[in-house]
Image 1 (cartoon, rainbow, N blue to C red):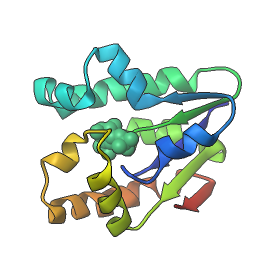
Image 2: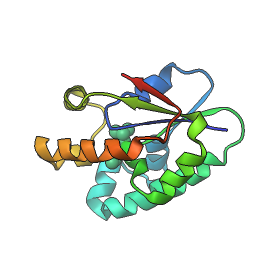
Image 3: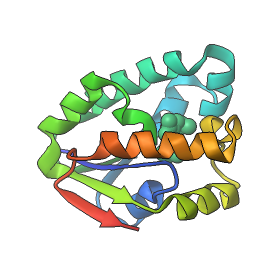
Length: 148
Ligand code: S3P
């Protein structure tokens, strides 16, 4: 069964995944391969709903992988009830990374590598509101919670 890393943008999923041994799949990187462009460009061209559909389809595919795989998810994977149900079924193998809002905000600001459309288009207050709403969705989806 796959081990899944969950958490808000900037909580360290991609960084932690790089330290783990074995097969690691970065969902966002896989999605970018599928769509042939960056997630940021895809959001601009097709909108968030189209991205969420591909994200859900990718999660479902990855959960079917046999053997030991670590899957680093995108922070919004918990938005759909269907995804949350799939994640609940995998709860014993899920790790949630948590971080305070201030740290997340600073990390994302300093991250010159990943362009995050939801960060770019929101004020700090709106982004904090998103953070709080998301934290409620991650709750109870993972057996192990690590504060990064
Ligand atoms: C998103 C998080 C991003 C990426 C996309 C949307 C979100 O992944 O999937 O920009 O809605 O939280 P990271 O959590 O790896 O930044």
